[in-house]
Image (cartoon, rainbow, N blue to C red):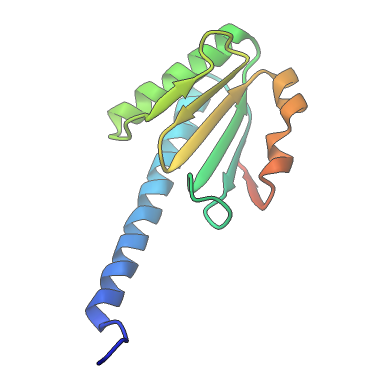
Length: 133
């Protein structure tokens, strides 16, 4: 009995991984552009694929007011939908101090600077952060 994977099984796994990585990069680009469109501050992207089975990447951005945070999150969700990334959920819209937009492969946190400093998600998820703006 041969227990080694066939070459075609290996190739299909590699193709699936490459496709998922491409999807993550495309989603990150859409999120980044949506945040920049509404003038987000301190945008950070973090690859958490090796330490989380919930998402492959986290994006953290700041807004200047609750209204700005809400506008940022709304734009991210809208642009993601247009690009084919359906939001799984959006949390925190009522208070709008910290809104989480779950896109599956990418989770976006839009926060007021005070909430961002208090919760310090960058330290919690520290691994290989990539600052983008």
